[in-house]
Image: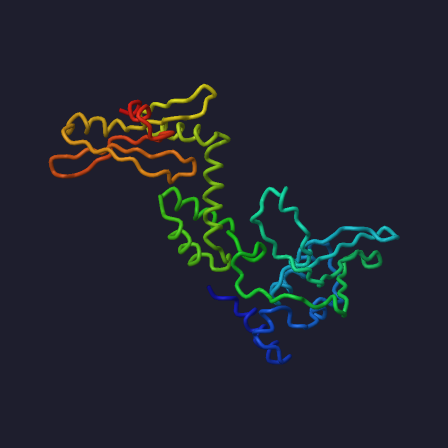
Length: 303
């Protein structure tokens, strides 16, 4: 991965001018007051325009803004604070009752923030940044944009490419290489590809559950299938066979191989396959089964 030229250039020049080594930058902030970048006399027509201007400046510096609050002062004028995305301080967590114990936070209590307020005289929005300790950061800046929400992800065109390549059975790693080549400004990572593929599957399932979608695809592909459920409707076994392989089995029924894989799927169900062999030593898949367990009763049901 390679960082953006603007960020790398700014980091190098600031380090030379201020005498800050790269080691100091990695261990914390560089001690530079960046409030001057946001001190402007510009009157913005809308609040969103002011926010976009401030976010564009922050990205070139190497950090990101997030909305901190929305309030009104005594005369009714609205204003909002934009804080560094690493500003929220770490909160003590109850490790005994917390649900997700393995979560992490990037918040380090960064003091940097700016204020955007409405001015009645000009009927516009202004930005105010304090030129004090609030204008400094206590953390290193962004070097690689990948993994940051505001500057990395998949655009609408990239998502359409992921959809088309997924339908063509292209592997995620190859999809990733195509997206990087065609959309270099998106700065995606492999997790964006997996999340997009998951959203596509959820969209195509049209509200059906996993098992319902599994059987729906089997019916669409004209598979012959049998399923077995328990008393409460939980799937126990699912047997799938294609009509073409049935005809092959009737023709070449002399040699049959059976094998069961380990529980490598997310549901812990063994995957059982039956494979046939032609006289020319070519294998063909006869059927496959998802089984609840590898007991004698399960194999008897399959056979």
